[in-house]
Image 1 (cartoon, helix red, strand yellow):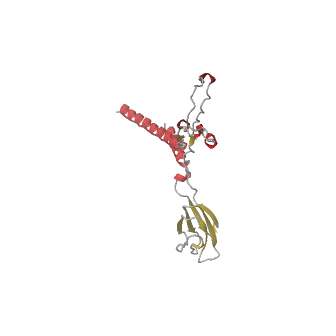
Image 2 (spheres, helix red, strand yellow):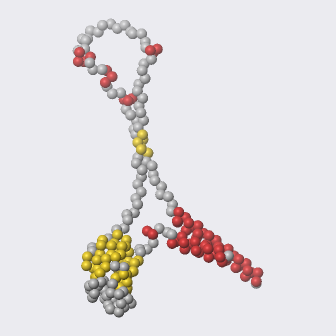
Image 3 (cartoon, one colour):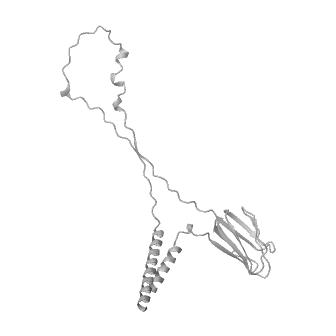
Amino acid sequence: MRALLRAAAALALLTVWLLPAGRASAASYSVAMKGYAFSPASLSVPAGSTVTWTNYDTAPHDVKTTSGPLSIHSPMLNKGESWSFTFATAGSYGYVCTVHPDMKAGITVRAAAPAPTYSAEHAHTTVPRTSSRPAHSPATHSAPAMTMPSPTPTPTASEAAVPQSAQPSPQSTPAPATTTTASTVRPLDPLLLLAGLVAGVAVLCLLLVGSRTARAREEEA
């Protein structure tokens, strides 16, 4: 049973370690002041990272920027002392030790990657087609009726050229478009599901151990 508990605890620690880096705290970096030089002399970090300088020489050293978006100047550090600074602004920083100008180094701060955005899919518009009027069937034609000549004057050539069917028919108006918008559903994070499963297994193991311990005490009593 103890081996099972240890395995569950190890799985829980592994799950926490595998969580996305964006949810963890900002990274930390170290620069050593040793042998009258900065080590490493060139460093590239993401925005929001913290850099710590530690002096290992007997001589005092400090950190002062010579270029970059911000001006930085640390206090004088004696042997064994440290100083930290969090870089929130992206850019290239060059710095030196004011006591020993030959000690030069640089830090490149990368801009943080933008968070992914999720947008709805493009709307799909469906327009129903309107069917044209069916042609008259020859069977539906009725015999022409005899009409008496009308006393009204005959239409002119310009009036006869205009067809009677030019007027718009109310039945030919297309039906309104139907718009369907698809929504996107963000899938669950599998790492969070794994963490919940491991936590459940650990709680179950603890309950089993507790019940066996209580039963053993009752038998001894």
